[in-house]
Every structure is written in structure tokens, then in C-alpha cells.
Image 1 (cartoon, rainbow, N blue to C red):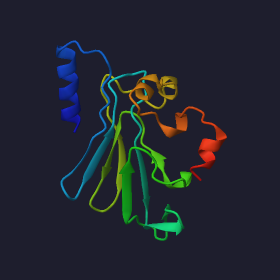
Image 2: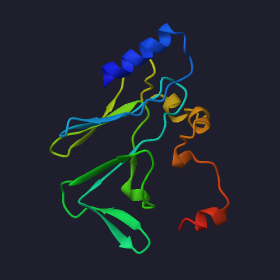
Image 3: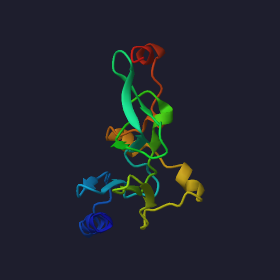
Image 4: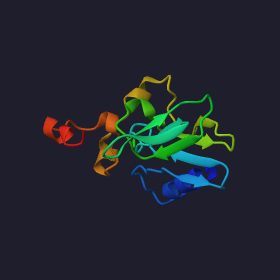
Length: 158
């Protein structure tokens, strides 16, 4: 996956394409899953990517209200999605910009930085100040940074 991202970045550079590229990929060999949340920019936020893990994923209220339950020490389910699939905020963890997650056959989840010229370490204050304009313009704004909506539109979703 790292070679693929590096190759795409090289092609973009060779063709003088300066607009950031959003590269969220998810691939599997049937046993291991690799998912990336990446942007070729040091200042912009990547398109959002989230994961949830637990023992069961089930409906807890009529009308399609689901939640992830953790009834065991080990996870039986790991889901990766562009946006949280439930209203249960505690169920979802955001994958950091320019990181990948690897889900092993034993259901371990590893979050690994994609270290290249666009990587900004978490210890750098710039990591907290990435802009959202590019992702928003492309329609990929992260919910935690979403624009304010009228209360009635929020109530209609509850």
C-alpha cells in the first residue's frame, strides 16, 4: 500500500499536479485488511475514515438504531467506514490523517503512520490545525468538523 501511494505521488509530481490527492483505500487478501486515510498535503485534512470494534453489532431500538457492544475482551467485529454508521459516538474512533490501519487475522487493529513528505507527527502543533476546506469542497468533510446545522435538521435524524 505504501508503494502504491508513493507511486501515485511520484506520477503527480512528474506531471506537475499540485492539487492534493485524497487516497482512502481499503484492500484485503481475505485474511488481513489494510485501510488508508491519506492526503498529499501537510496542511489539509484527509477525507474522513473511522473504525468500530466489538463483540456484537445489533439493533437496540426500533427504527434501525444500532450499536457496537463489547461483551468480551476480544473483538469479533471490526468495521471501517468513511463516516460513523451509528449515532453512538463512543462506538467510533477516527483514523488519523496520513495513517493506515491493519486488521490482522487475529482481529488485532494496528494504526500505523504513513511517513513521507506529507506526514506531520502528532507532536507537531500543525497536526491539530489542518484545514478542512479541500475535503469540504470535495464533499468529504469529517463529522467532527462539520458545519453547524439548524436544530430541526438534527432533530429529524434522531
